[in-house]
View 1 (tube, rainbow, N blue to C red):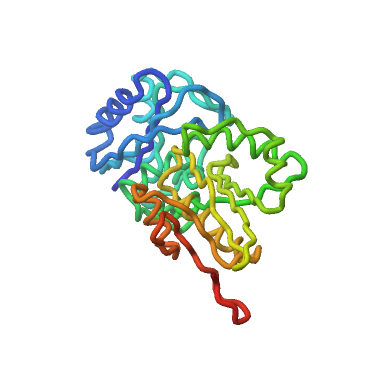
View 2: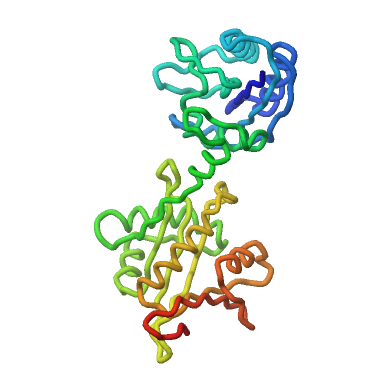
Length: 308
């Protein structure tokens, strides 16, 4: 039967520890069938300056679930982990080995719960697991691990308003995200955000991930002209650690809807020819490249008026 194992380490020689753990389990619990790449992630459930490396591995085994647990804990101790997390209190660790899914076995007792009860909530588990077994079904949810990861990739997009504490949160997020867009990003203050939003022509959108952290932002600027109201997309940026999750595409789709709601006849943006990945995204979203570096998306016709 196949057993899927999650591995992590955030202190010491992290990569070496995970490699030793994978090798130590090979033969002691069964035969190694595959191992994922390493993923660097922030700690979840506690504060630490030490980032984790995480991986997932799959073995063919004949052991029972509790015999597997005994071996994984023995390997943890051999690699220097002497303190286990208890009562929801987590610590830095030189190695962490978790049994994630063990065939169709279900266990729920004082020492072991299978499948792992928090697997569906943990990106640091799902990303490496999805690499080696995207079609593995997580029984408690009745869906594949690929679908579980897709659900985590859904961005909670909201518009920043000028009232309350929203501008202060927005300024903090912009100061964290904008350096990934340009090396010339200046500091943004709460007053700056309030001033932009006070014009009524600038609309600022942000997206939170599953942990409630702002990981993406974009600005929609309205421009009234003799040929109709046009909207421009500016400063689309996603946190570098979240690239590949589809956040930029989700933002663009949201801005298309918002531009229609705000009465714009077209949505425009500029993009250099060398930004190949971004340009592919804009084409997929229905934007048409013009002879300049401008991409234009024309709003659907309403009431017989053609979009400009």
